Amino acid sequence: MSATLALTEHLIARASVTPDDVDCQAIIVRRLEAAGFACETIVSRDVTNLWAVKRGTAGREGKLLVFAGHTDVVPTGPVDAWQSAPFVPTHRDGKLYGRGAADMKTSLAGFVVASEEFLAAHPDHAGSIALLLTSDEEGPATDGTVKVVEALKARGERLDYCVVGEPTSVDTLGDMVKNGRRGSLSGKLVVKGIQGHIAYPHLARNPIHLAAPALADLARVEWDQGNEYFPPTSWQMSNIHAGTGATNVIPGTATIDFNFRFSTASTVASLKQRVQTILDAHGFDYDLDWTLGGEPFLTPRGELSTALGDAIRDEVGVETELSTTGGTSDGRFIAKICPQVIEFGPPNATIHKIDEHVEVAFIDPLKNIYRRVLEKLVA
Image (tube, rainbow, N blue to C red; front, side, top):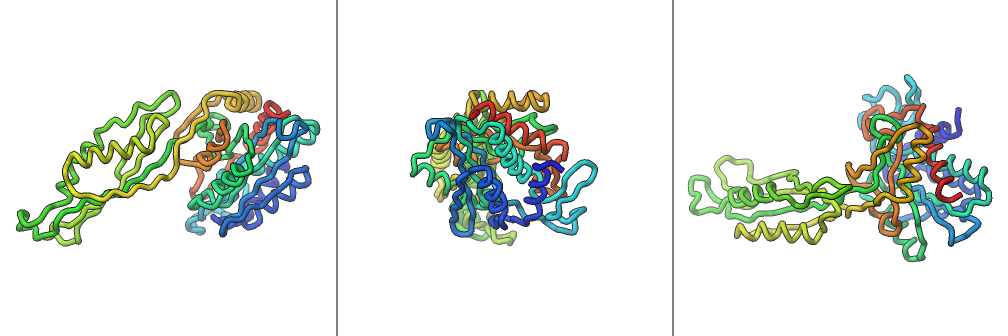
């Protein structure tokens, strides 16, 4: 059994449902300290975070490449629906099954073993290597990576490159990497009317009728045209609620939940202003509360994307695609202190699903790609 596979299985066997780390990071710390890393555990409430650094011979002047990821996993769902116990790593038909196999304990094992192999082969490396791990990525993400980033920023720590181990591949290892993610901005709109008997509409004011033309206008807007890396910004309603449940009552309010998935072609301020302008044009009374889930980030083509693309081609013979599709990730926090952030990991078809798994044949090539990136950027 390869070292990467063995460590992957060891981590899968820990039931680290968010935000419980269940000593996954302690397992990793023992390996990293043996390889010469200085390891710092940063606890915030019930979240465990790790910042581990191995400085190069050039010290702080050398390039710093960070591997970032999370030890927490989502809940298993109904255990009886799994073909094998979710926290017992199990092999079937060339696949390794277990919660976290794809998201993202295989990547974590790859980070560790790639770093060990690189340091053994390059004891005089010029650049530095770090790992930034959290147990709060699958949860609220309020006490995890964001807290480590705040601490590093306060210290003046400089990050040059970051590879986040999110499962980005689609059909085969390396066919897609993420060089950015869209932002997420949610709104809760409460349109105010006057409740009344449905047979006497002149004595009431129906908020559904008030809201409908405005919602139609919002649905027709072209918010932006996207850019080279991002699709156009999307506005979608996720829920509409009004009424008491009775068929003879005009409701007093209507509540509409909506969300923007927005690119770097728009800003939070511009989206908010345009929504408010459209609503105000319809002349009804309303309240609107906003929640910013995450700002977009983008790493244009450059040193990191080139090194990663070359490493994938050299290891598995695949031409990778840069993409910004999908949801948010902790890359949005790291991008605030690191100019080049790219996500890369195994195929994502089974993440968060029953019988999550990874192809065993991809595990060592994934580790080798991570090692090749180190060789290209910090050797």
